[in-house]
Structure formats: structure tokens, C-alpha cells
Length: 336
Image (cartoon, rainbow, N blue to C red):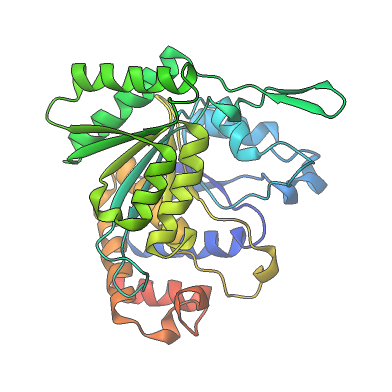
């Protein structure tokens, strides 16, 4: 029985890696009925909006989406579409699994960390105003409801997946009310629902130092919005960068899986983009919708392909001489 899934190709390299991802997912035997939807800078010309209403309505109806990278202007222009989607669908939990991949050489080995990020509050609430000319205020929002539900999500995730420890990173020594509430709620939920899971707290700046000294000491990280955004990218750097890690944004009724890297307009249309991050996010999506067997076939295929290290099958960012299509075709051959 086919499953309807909303698909946002995105900007820049998005259409290329989306095409490659669809091809590999089909080769794995997943019966997906893709509903392709516009969003991003490329949607403006035809739809006069970076996030058209019919895209929102389709995601609301089908409650599952796979999304390519979207352009976000720096210092001006339109609001981040990713932030808008999180607010519209209350995607309060961001999940970023980070693991070392055989064949992708980095400074570290045996890294396996899951970053859980609160996705709707903090400074990303977007409450900014100019107090007087030259003075801007940005408000950091933390609610007990928001802090407790992300902590509850993290400990539930840890138990369901056999994780051993949750580390909460914070700056409660300075932001005693907002970050203080975050760790207060994490302690409470750990006591009530996290029995059997080791719990620790760490001030965020020390946490960054400890991560680059020895990432193997960490298992799961639980962070508020801004810290989670920064540290999830830092952790991606431990295993090869944003091109080799997946991401999911979840609420109680909706899930959007995404490539967490940028749209890379400088290489768009040149068959150079690595589709792995979006494909890995696609595997997370397949697991979420009950098509884990297809997801396992894809994961086995890309693990084997990376370990083999045939440069003609890999993209330039991971030391290859091939391109997007060569990578996807090699995966399809392995799956079949």
C-alpha cells in the first residue's frame, strides 16, 4: 500500500539531491506517492510567496514531509521558512543523529551522538524590536510546558532506542530564569520518567570544549533552541560535516524530515552535490512511517558504498571524483 508523502525539493542543489533520493528510495522498494510542493526563493516567481498556502495545507493534510535545503537571507529579506514551518506545525523536537561513517575520514572515530533540540522557543521565537535608534532587544522565551515536553521527548527517545545517558547543556549560571527553567524541567522529567538513563548537566561553553576534546564521552545531548542549532552543526563537523548527517522535526501530529545543510547555489546544476544527508533523512522518514525494511536496505547500501571508497562513485565533498547521479546509481545497484 502506497504512502502519500509531501516533498519540497527546495532551492539550489535541492532539486538534484531530491531526484537522487527519490530514485534510491524507489529502488529500495518503498511505495511512496510523492506530492511535490513549492517552497523557498524559487517559489516566489510563480506563487508570490516563499511558503505558499497550498504547500502548508498539503503538509497539514498528510502530516509527513521530506524537505530539501531552503535559502534563508542573512541580515534581511524574508523570515526563515524552516522557522515558519516549525511554528505552523508545532515541530517542537529536532532530532539530529550524528555518527562516524567508515570511509569518511575525520579527526575522530567512533562518534555516536544524538542531539535533541527544542525547536519552537528561546531566541528563535523572533520577538525583536528596536527600543531606540541603535538599540535592539531580542526576547528569549522559555515556558514550563515547552521545557517539560522536550525533556519528556528526550527521555522517551533514550528508552526506546537503548541510549545510556542524556547530557543537558545550558547557561543557567548567567540566564538563571530561562535556562534555569530548562534544567529544572529536565531534572523533574528525569526523576519521573527517565529512570535507568544516566543524567548530567554541563554549562554550554564547557560542553563545547569537552565535545572537541573527546566526543565519545557523550551519548545524547538535550538543548534549548539556539544552543541546539549551534551544537548540532558542531557535532556534524566531528563526523564529516552537514553533508553526512540527517535531521527530523517532529510534533505530536506531524513530521518533517530534512537535509540540514544549505542550498549551495555555487554548485547547483553541476552534478556535484552529495545527496547523502537528504537520503539519510529519508531513511529516518521510512522508519517513522513503518517502512523500516526499505530504510535498512538503503542504510546498508550507503554504509557499504562509503566503506568501499571507490572514488568514481563518491561526490567531491567526501573525496570522490563522481557526482550526484553516480552516487545514486551506485546505491541503486547495491540495493538491487
